[in-house]
Length: 69
Image (cartoon, rainbow, N blue to C red):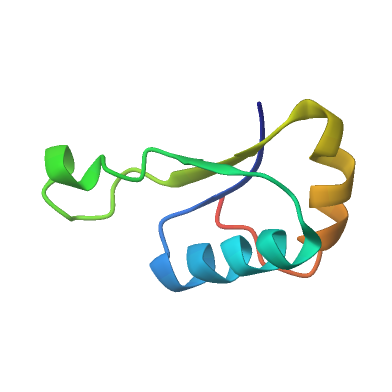
């Protein structure tokens, strides 16, 4: 799996997930549940991961989304 997006913003994360779903790209959100450890302060960004074979296509789909890193 390759990281294609990173953000602390739950709205942006939701939008990224929607774009990937619409494009038919499988993805995994790493660190989604870290908030239980961090106390919901948003210190740890969530990372969107896709299979290596889909990385270029995912980056194209997400090209217009402002990066949070």
